[in-house]
Image (cartoon, rainbow, N blue to C red; front, top):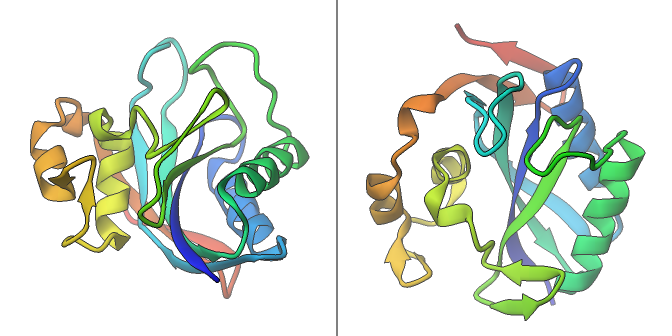
Length: 174
């Protein structure tokens, strides 16, 4: 049975729009994953480790027959294929793919927590998710709109453009 899941995808090294396109195209090649919808792309100020370039972030809605753990393994493998190296926590990266939500399920494992434990405090996750998420569904007991109202760092999130998977291009809007 297929489940709707939501992923956050971000990058701040190299050709950022190319990295996002590579991640979304890579997701489409994984057996058991169908990309359903993409948010707009947002340029965002770094959070945590701030001495680095701005990120491009987006949210991806998928339908998947993979279990949460198999989905995690698949996105970690895709990150590696796209050149992800983990050196500094919250540091620069070619690509970062996080599982935000997996249907209505909660997962609490040492290596995987769903809903993503930090998503509700991060405007760079909530703003893109707002583009594609069912607004009647609750996240950790609140509507997405309520989480967005509480996000302190919304000014650091600026609409950048969109990705077109059919043409394999990014459209810069500013």
